[in-house]
Image (cartoon, rainbow, N blue to C red; front, side, top):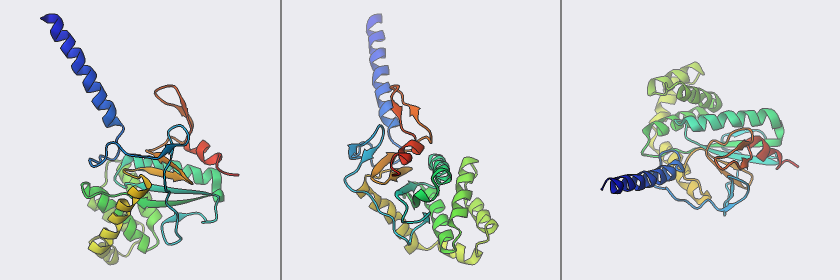
Length: 233
């Protein structure tokens, strides 16, 4: 009887370990998608989706559209991992300068009110040409575990936004609907969570480290710096 209990316990622990491993592959607490089609493998830990997004001049862009390497980032402004990805993107711009152009897009979901409020803050700051300052401030607040409606209001004042215009924009239902649609439309590009990064036609899920690293299987994985560098001719 004792052996049966021991065997049963071992089986239970094995099943629990498998479940935890599967859960680890999800990101951004998105309950709607656990197993997704990311396209065909390109390099270690990156994929080539069936279709990739393109950058337009009227969105939030850092750099020149003529740059040979085009990077698109879907980010959740309430998520620490998106903040880490933003730091890596900043380092890419320092290292590669005008050889890359970066477009940032919101990935906000209805189940996470904080992600919607933070994304709206960045969108509304964009209207007053202060989106980069708001984005930096929001990610700093996330890092300090200090993101709140009051902090967003303080940030808007600190970066010099017109307070009446900003407050009105935050409650604009039509603008919020358009912003949420960006996240919904991203599914056609195999985007189901944030951060998700496109480097030309390669898709990277999660906050990829800046430098090369070894994964859990001791396989070398390209960091963002290497991945971008090999695409520059």
